[in-house]
Image 1 (cartoon, protein in one colour):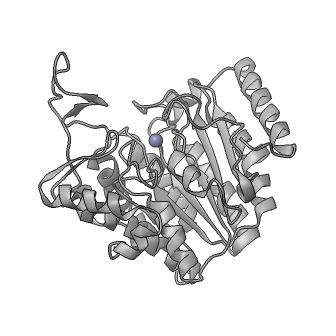
Image 2 (image 1 turned 45 degrees about the vertical axis):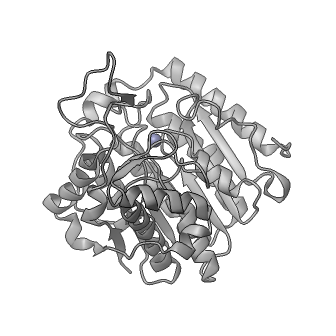
Image 3 (image 1 turned 120 degrees about the horizontal axis):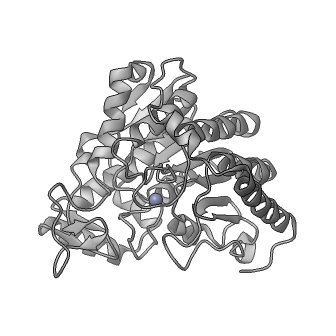
Length: 373
Ligand SMILES: [Zn+2]
């Protein structure tokens, strides 16, 4: 069975806002010569282009999708928010929530982004595809039901999960979020649920500042079904793989999902302007290998990756290529041109040992019965 790659040029046309990095332009903040928010089409378009140039595209089942419809959106978001978003979008664009500007037609583009995730999950859940990558844009993992934030306008993965559940295609879903920022939206939506396990590996106190704590393990029947792994700045390749081994893979094995969805951000990479971590393209490759093996063991290989953040235009394509090679089991490669340079820059053994101790302590914490956080 094939690996699907879901994308749509229209998602690359999502635009809006006058920012320099994440600062609104004005007063003493000069507009940037090239673009505004770091969430730009370039990271995604360059990933898609690299897949074409390397030849890997030819081994993938390339697809688009229809937009998530109003019923699908309303399973996660209140009608009042959707109405306001649609109205502003029709009127030329604007901004709702925090750092979520959009242009005319932004509503339809966001619904299409959610549609790419939804169709990828559906195709894998039904066995039409072995696994899939959805190049969703705008991203989704920060979006709360009633408060878009952090470049995320609709909760793509949550919308996809609720659609799959409504269609009876999946009952137990695990979401592993390795975007460098906390998956606060996905966490909030499923915090009181025991049918969706949410795991987030993120840089501690990056974004949002007030979420992502280790102690937040879910509530009511959802207690124990939310796992936060806040990693200190500077964590690199070994720390990420150690956290996967010690915390993520055992949690997936305990949960026994029907399907695994990865909120796949590439902003833990060393070159990212919005984080202070040291992951490399090989880190993402190895994590994909690990989670693919887990999916093989636990749920017939059903695995969907949905694109989230990642803001280095030069480096994201190499991280994405490595991940998609592993998904497809392909021998077509795009070697990381920065591999040697980043290998030298990994933490020294004393610092690595310190990070490993922190991760081991977190694993011990998760071995204890959860307290309502
Ligand atoms: Zn992010």
